[in-house]
Structures are given as C-alpha cells and as structure tokens.
Image 1 (cartoon, rainbow, N blue to C red):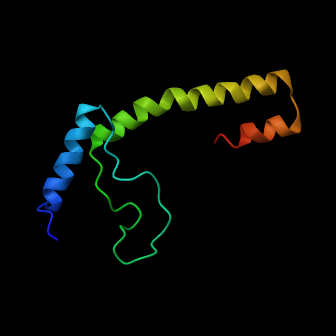
Image 2 (tube, rainbow, N blue to C red):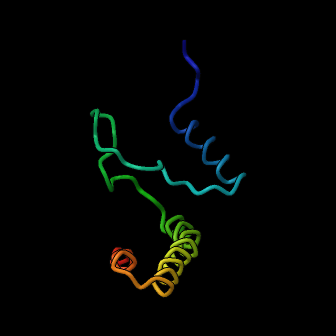
Length: 90
C-alpha cells in the first residue's frame, strides 16, 4: 500500500510540528551504535548552529544548577566521596 508521503514531505511535517510547539529539532535523542547499515554514523547528522545555541541556552541553567548543588553538598560534607563528585565535573 502506498501512503503518498515522500521523505521530504514527512520531514517538513515534523519540522512544522516542532516549530508549532517550539521544540528543538535534534534529529534523535541518543546514539546506541550502528546495528544496521541504514543508521547514521555518530557525528554525521547536520545540526544548524542556531539549534545548537538553543540547546546550550536550555541546558546551561541545568548544568550550572547541578554543579552548584554538588559544590554546596561538599561544603556541607567535605568528604572524599563529595570530592570525587567535584572531580567528575571537569
């Protein structure tokens, strides 16, 4: 059965949905390695610079908040375990 959707039309529809709901267009959520020949290689998917900026703008407060929490915990409990968490931040 033919559905009449070309890849270009399919991608355009999802792109429009992302625009409507102000979603970031990432092309996928994660990478598990190539299990079949039709999967993209790591770092082979084009991501516009503006989208990278949007990702970093959203992620920065989360990263900064996590780092602040880890440092506060170290101040409250200056243990070896707390120091190990700080060393993981680099």
